Length: 322
Image (cartoon, rainbow, N blue to C red):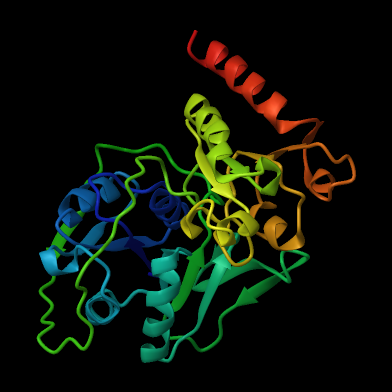
């Protein structure tokens, strides 16, 4: 029987939504589902993975794997893939995923596709779709002569099944020796934000040069707090140093697909649209009625964001807190 192996990314005590999507898709395929996780929280995540269809989870719970080290993770992945003998490997198309799995694919001489938005299973065959040319078209990709088919899915693309807490996964501890590491992680500077990462968020509020100065991002933070959203930004304001590049949405930043995307003072350059056009509902606020963002928007507000955004914040706070 065909088997799907899912990478559980993260080292918190809760599964990311992107991982739940992958486990749900694998379970819905009717194939045998296994998974693997690294770090001190691996066992906790493995137990949760069982609720979403994983029958077996391989874990490497060493503290040395709490933070991403490409060489250490690659060694562990190769060992787990060999033990699992899976036909397909699913992972999130995150920064970590895009760095780790091309290395793994090259070392195994197999095929890999990243940034996928659709996936289907037909027996041993896997077909995926991914956008090309900044989302102007899409390609359907299949695999030929690949020992294991590796697919990196964009978050917020697939439905999540209800957790079945009666289901449990068998857990197998894997010990990986990394005595000859050529790369050592000296320090990890973590974000202090408690909000969801942009790629995981269901609601994103983004700002551009229309905010005029860095201090005015406080308007978006207030709106995001009212909605339980995450704040993003255009490349222009990130390059100007108003906000960190970790907040950048666009072709050279993060690709997001939330249920709701609110663009404030963003004109809608093609590079930015490439990063957010997969959003389910797009609301654009701009004082230029000819701004390209309105061509992609589900709803458009032509007006001064300094007048519109505070009113939205007040109304959302009133409705959502009542």
